[in-house]
Length: 444
Ligand SMILES: Cc1cc2nc3c(=O)[nH]c(=O)nc-3n(C[C@H](O)[C@H](O)[C@H](O)COP(=O)(O)OP(=O)(O)OC[C@H]3O[C@@H](n4cnc5c(N)ncnc54)[C@H](O)[C@@H]3O)c2cc1C
Image (cartoon, rainbow, N blue to C red):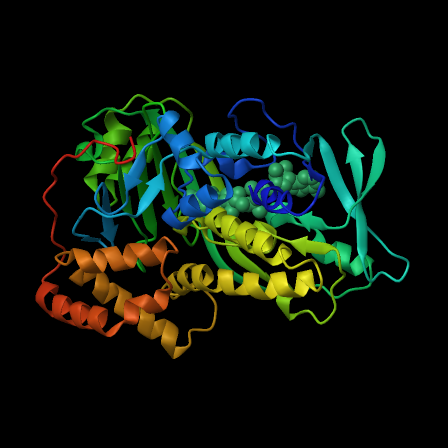
């Protein structure tokens, strides 16, 4: 996804863009080996959908045409935050309920239709080619599936190889330092299974989710997808592993706060097997801090920073980086890597603070906990309690987790006042919202 979006950005400023991928690229929406996480539930956050719309005008309409539910994350989803049910209200925070293969396929089709873009599938990137003084990357060495090798030259090479990016090694081969890495281990295991959606599921709403909290490391999401499907993703942090067999999944789902997830697992017709995937740690590579970096080279998306997937941020951050790249290239490519990495670091700061900051609530997670992180986590917990009765707070929270507003927006004086007032009123415990069914898709 990062590579496709970078190709979109580059197609405005470069006459020829070649997208290289190790995989055969499917001609229909389908899982593939190079993206094992594609079989797990993927949520495209509201800011990500907006960014994709900017890159591919009309994409939201295409989603509607594909019968993708465009869900009001505040009005049509039940949020159990730290066990407290957030009051629902209509909002403009709209996410797409779309499987990862369908989203990727749709985006790839749009990229393939751009003038000058070519795909080179079944081809592995082996390393970089540089000028004799190694100041500039001039191309990339490739190996095709049949074993033949090729070098392509380029004004700009972009590494979008995902978490397994070999740029730190490739830089070393050219005599550069590897970037400093920040890693926060969370040991998440995800299990996703897709079922046939029935109108009565989730009380007629389009999604439900619950987060893990210290002492209760289990979480779950159920969300309606395209084509009358509903996906259930069970997850555990810190080594807690959801099972993949029917009985085990049901008992895991029954242990979660929202009863709606277990209801789907118990009664709905499965359409796929349950698939597990582990994600050990959020990892951020600080290329912006390197003093030397070759010209003509960039690193994007998961290769730059990969986040605990529980927060659903990766594709949105990749889309924001593509918008950034497109904007930076309008003033030429002088100092591009420096400008891109610095500005990307600012794009990453907020989602990184949200993901890692929340994970640091768990005492088992290793990492520094400066006072602002401890304060913010305590404050957000109080916000969740207050948001059981105050939909304005729920809206403010959702704008932040959807990367529409920065986390500091939650510290606006009016919001703080509402949190404190609501927290003292609501300290009795979670309140349940009335389950009024709303099954319409706002986007349809
Ligand atoms: C369990 C899980 C759930 C997730 N859920 C969400 C979610 O809900 N929302 C969200 O926004 N994000 C989610 N993500 C993150 C999201 O999948 C990524 O952020 C997103 O795919 C962007 O990654 P990428 O393009 O950098 O890498 P990838 O999507 O991993 O793609 C890397 C590509 O590089 C190719 N490749 C790798 N090495 C080479 C090589 N040497 N030569 C040629 N090709 C190569 C691969 O074939 C692949 O096509 C989740 C991740 C996981 C693990």
